Amino acid sequence: MNAFSSPHVSSTVVREKLRDGEEIALFDLREEGPFAAAHPLFAVNLPLGRIEERLAGLAPRRDAPIVIYDEGEGRVAKALPIFRRLGYTNVSALAGGLEGWRNSGGEIFIDVNVPSKSFGELVEHERGTPSLPARELYERLERGDDLVVLDARRFSEYTTMSIPSGRSVPGAELALRVRGLAPSPQTTVVVNCAGRTRSIIGAQSLINAGIPNPVFALRNGTIGWTLEGLQLAHGETKRAGDVRENDRAAALQGAISLAERAGVRLIDAAGVDDLAADTARTLYRLDVRSPEEYEASHLAGFRSAPGGQLVQATDEWVGVRHGTIVLTDDDGVRARMTGHWLRQLGWNEVYVLTDWSDLPRESGVEQTPLAGPLPDVRFVSVKDLSERVAPFVIDLATSPEFRKKHIPGSHFAIRSDVEEIFGKLGARKIVLTSPDGLAARLAAPEFEAQGFDVEVLEGGLAAWLAAKRPIEAGLTPEAALSEPNDVYKRPYEGADNSAAAMQAYLDWEFGLIAQLERDGTHGFRVLKG
Image (cartoon, rainbow, N blue to C red; front, side, top):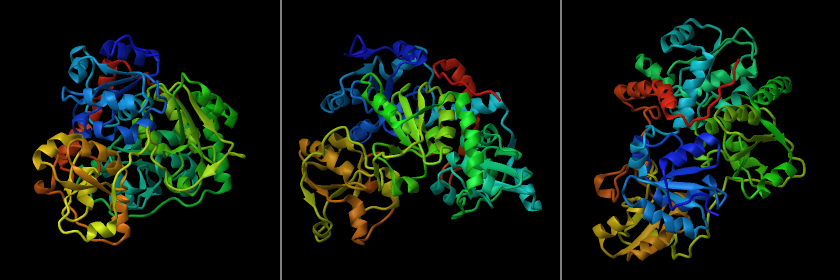
């Protein structure tokens, strides 16, 4: 039964459900660039052309209450049949779209992963998380003070740019591994990220866990370091080593106490099955260990969601606000540390599964959960495509992926622009590709419906690379069939950001607490010291 009385739902009703702790998903159908320019606090970006790829992961329950919106571009009308075809029965449009939200007094936020970023600011405000300015850290490093710098970001971000002497320890790993990296309680521990959130949350994680060391967040992260005129390191690969058993035991003791205080509950396999059998509940099963550990072995049915990133970007895994979350690891520390933050982020039901005995396991990289069957398409092999003269190849990779590498002569496109693309090109034979071929296969029927004669590159660019075929980089205007606004350029990622953009980003973060107060839907509850 539809939880809403109308195919259109008012912004007021959405805000009431958010405040009341009821399950609800609010999906923004635009590309990430426009989404980052303006959206409600708990809106989750689900671009029209990526629905089949992302929906099942974000909203695994087919009758969960879902509200979709755009900014008047007509995406809602195109999306509703897709949701119905995929079996989603409780989908409504936001009355008036984004403008309706704005006109009703709803607060508008910019950037991405905003719930976590605004929460980080609230944590620092309420807990007084200690921080060091970049210049002071630089001077301490120059003096050779007894300190360690731990980078709480993903390893890929760390290796792109890092604080000199820093070591990669992604957020959920900090409490588990810090004792091996700072065995003396006198050693100062400085946690950094690119901006503010993961620095604050990482430092406060260690403080909450009760380690005896002096702990600081690097104020404003690598942005603050750069704005101070200091040089970053590039290409570093330092990681934490194995965890000693006594350090693991100490970390577990602190994590157990902390999780209990935050209201995280333990659950066994039978309990997880009971949650899954509850048809009125949206359930997420997430493995918070590192991607490498997940690939080596993981519990069947659990997705890979490294704990630090899950806290930083919960909306990339969990699309239904107030859904139920079950976390797991194989040490008891990382899931509890992650869970204690999710509870503070307003997730009412957070569980930790610690006993893996007799549970089925799998290995390998995570397979994208799909909401429907894959369509039948005509494939072309790498060999056959490479032997053709000037084939017209359309690549549905994201624009950063396309810029990094693509088949020579191919064209970048966003799937939802298919009508405009056909108008530019006219009917002609094309080959669709994407990084692993999945997005291309899903999109093929839509291109065919517009009049294209479509083949799909079997295995996508990954197969092309495996066959050692030539590639090229860059995204020229001539190669762009769509405006490359599908991915928002973060002012805190990469090494080529302007000082003005970085400072503007920091200024925006400083104002988030006031926005939270005006919004009134967040439900955050910071654990007291």
